[in-house]
Image: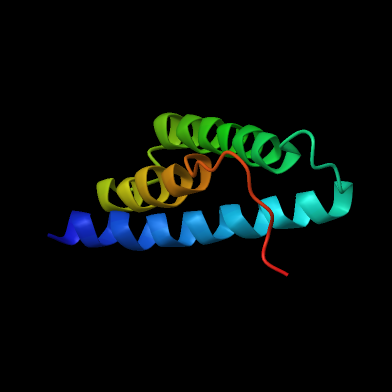
Length: 90
């Protein structure tokens, strides 16, 4: 039950962070013909996952609960929000 709660809270945080970053990139670049926000979030998320996974493996830096929260919850929610055509809320 603790694992489900950790993943759920992490997913909420990651999804909210993805929305904020995507909206910021959309507003900065103002290019509606290509989803640069999605590209930015996915590349950034992959880099963070790779860096933290390497750190976790080489130094045993995370407990199993923290891995669930960060990797599955926060970073999973950050990198897997799909919406084909959208405009951010004003």
